[in-house]
Image (cartoon, rainbow, N blue to C red; front, side, top):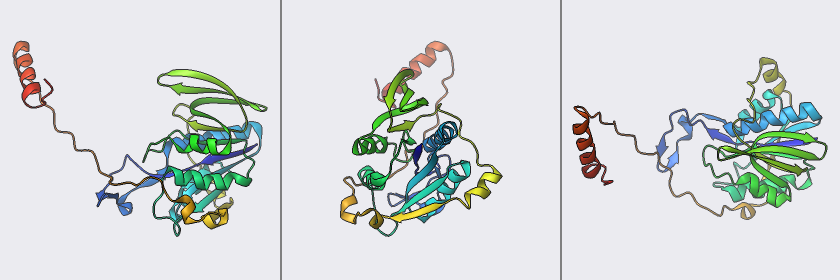
Length: 257
């Protein structure tokens, strides 16, 4: 079984993020594998262990993305591919990503492609479904369970607090939701083995693409942090007095009444 995982390098939202001139300051940011993509890596490894085959992890980015690919290899993936756009692209969007991935998969025979449900930096959730459409694959999003039997897959997906059960056929692209599994931590032996596993590096020229082909369709105007929350007020006194004060504050300060 040929299993592919779409992986994105994202900044760690649990660490302090600094914004300068409408852009994230890369020097001070901590970068990780997009957490939803970790579910995809883990599930890909589980499927390979159950059904055989190999897991290839693919990312689009710059040289720094190699660290996240090596982490996926240390988790247990077999191969990694970095499509390096450092010298070719200044900006990109979901159209750009899908166009590059479509070219990459053109000569591949993928049985299952797994991706994160969303990326925590932009959270558009577009890449998986758009790529499936371009590749002519079945697509199921926000999955929390997948069982493969031959050419069939039985899937459970999260639908706003409920569960939908889906049966579909391979080839298949799925996007992974929290609850699908518990991603493993890379072990020391896994980290050592990852250093020897193949990591292929491509550029968009290798995919018969040029800059005009992958020019983004959208433009980011500004990135900014949400305003800091103000401290709340504690109302004191008798209940009747608190109610009167609350109503007054809702009228004069919050202006919601």
